[in-house]
Image (cartoon, rainbow, N blue to C red; front, side, top):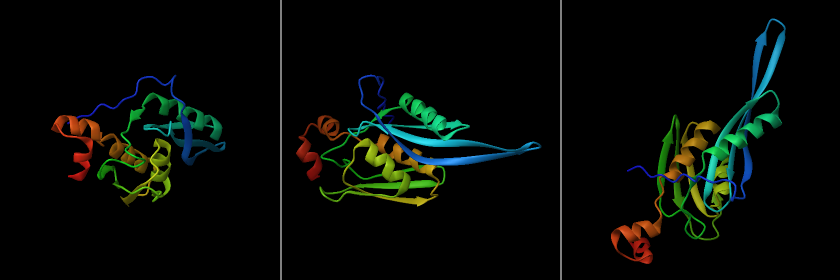
Length: 171
């Protein structure tokens, strides 16, 4: 079942960007070394909208700016219920596998590195997360966003089943 959570307009959203990782790439030529930078950036409004982008340039600031522009082009909407995610979710991208689990109020974001940046930028305040396999920030960001994209909204589940939202959470 394909879920299209794409957000089309960015002009009415107040997006905040967060740098996840910078990679310095060196190209050795006859004349010496040439450095360039690749920056992976996530942007979000801390209210359920998230996007990621990769920018490459000769300077860090230019790479981050390109990453932000790319991130604004592929935004998705994520259902957040009372500061946490509605249900457990597992996703994989490349060698990185992520596991997200809802947590009670006051738990905080129990996640590391790239996953923490994505979850805080999307606006999740309480979640338990574990990454398995590769710790490559590029693949972790993509796997985390894939997991968030597969989440189902409790109101839509309740409507499809013909029950109340409280009944969906009680099981």
